[in-house]
Length: 123
Image (tube, rainbow, N blue to C red; front, top):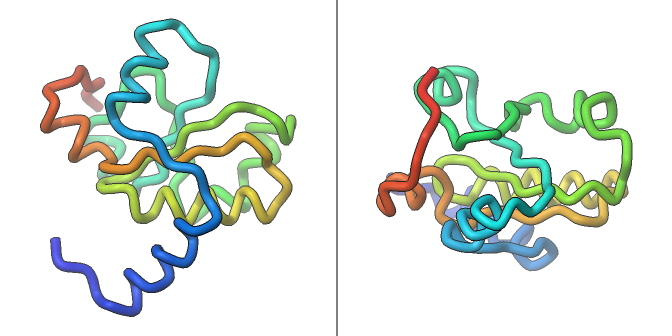
C-alpha cells in the first residue's frame, strides 16, 4: 500500500517518541509466556477477518476514548499492532500522551506476522 506523504510525516513524528519492536520480538514474548496486553488497533472488519492469538481489539478510532476503562493501570505493559505498524505507532504515541508508560508498537504489523506464517485467530 502506498501511503501519502502527509500521513507518513505524522507517522514518522510519532515514531520519534515511541518504542517499537519487531514481529519476532512479539512472537518470542508470547512463546516465553511474558505478561503483556496485546492490542489490535485495526478497524472492526480487519479484526473480524483475523488477529493475533490473545489480542484484544481497541480500534484506532476508539482506543483513546476506551483505553482507561479497559486498562486502568498506566504502567501496564502493552504491545499495539495494526496492518503494518503505522497506526499502532500513532496510537502508542497518543497513549503515552495520556500517561501510559509501557507502550510498544509492533513494527511490521499483522502483514509482517502473516509473512512469517505465525499463528492467527480467525474471526
